[in-house]
Length: 112
Length: 114
Image 1 (tube, each protein chain N blue to C red):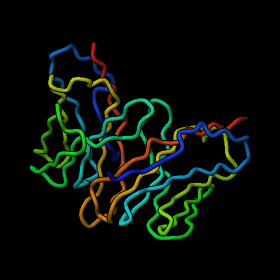
Image 2: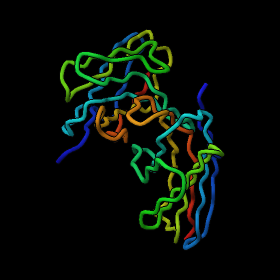
Image 3: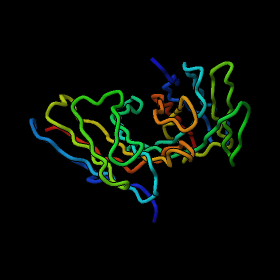
């Protein structure tokens, strides 16, 4: 059974701090990795995608991938109360694949 | 506006009824998906379609059926055989073959069994 594991949280950080969200996956041949943000009662929206080892930065968000350790993380710098949401990690076995596996998500709470 | 639409936003089903959830996209994406989300859980794949007139079962297809007669449309029917259908249903699409595999989601339909 291919799995994507996340700490359910809640992760609570003060406004302006760095929030660090982590995800591990079991399928070694996984090639595509995604972070989605989901506000309560809403659908997921894509935050970041990453395909190769290392860091990828987009504004306040940085995704980090380590395929050897089967680990992907999302850093949110200068956290804002509007970042309070559930963050879903998603993994696809290969590029162009059609069966993406989603983690259960980590709830983030940013305190003003 | 390009995007994915789902209707209705809320749906109530009586025991023994079949209901159909609509999903339409105008992104010209080849692939479309249906997921189910239960509280505190991740998304579970029900069905997916890579091309018109073709679809495959996901991990929890029992009690559900789909069709893909048009590229833009991928309706999901929740049949009376689905014993616990109360959940949040999400439709998604991706460019498919030759594009990235990033999936984009519609706003969702919340189904409640009365």
